[in-house]
Image 1 (tube, rainbow, N blue to C red):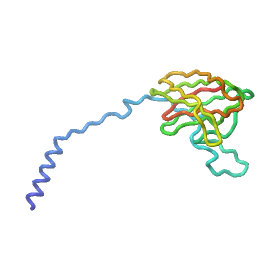
Image 2 (image 1 turned 180 degrees about the vertical axis):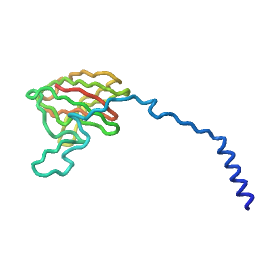
Image 3 (image 1 turned 45 degrees about the vertical axis):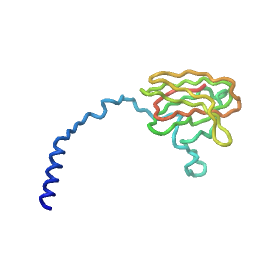
Image 4 (image 1 turned 90 degrees about the horizontal axis):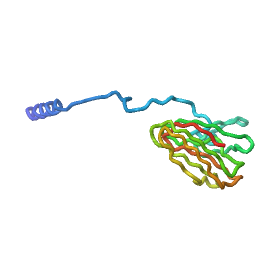
Length: 165
């Protein structure tokens, strides 16, 4: 029995010695991105957090619940960066029947952007775009409802900046 255990250990040692191991610097295949803070977009919905009375929460993972009237306030700027979570504009947009959407994709992968319309039971997809790597989307969806509540969703992974007006 003792000889069998020694024999098995010897065979295992010989097999392991034929195995080669290699390593590479992990960051060779990854592009370097300038990190920036999310502005005008968020992943952590403020209405899911407990807040003190009178306190104004600032973030959200679901569609926004605050309004931005583009016809009165003008252009809304945003930028965002997320590895795994989808991002949403912090406001929904009202006041126009056509919006000009501009999104610059900083990643080396395609970015999916969705224009969505809020409804009583969530939201519906109005239009979607695939923004090619390192490219800029400029689009003006038309024939929208002037009082409709529209927002943008950025499907992860993402790194972008832009505006809606």
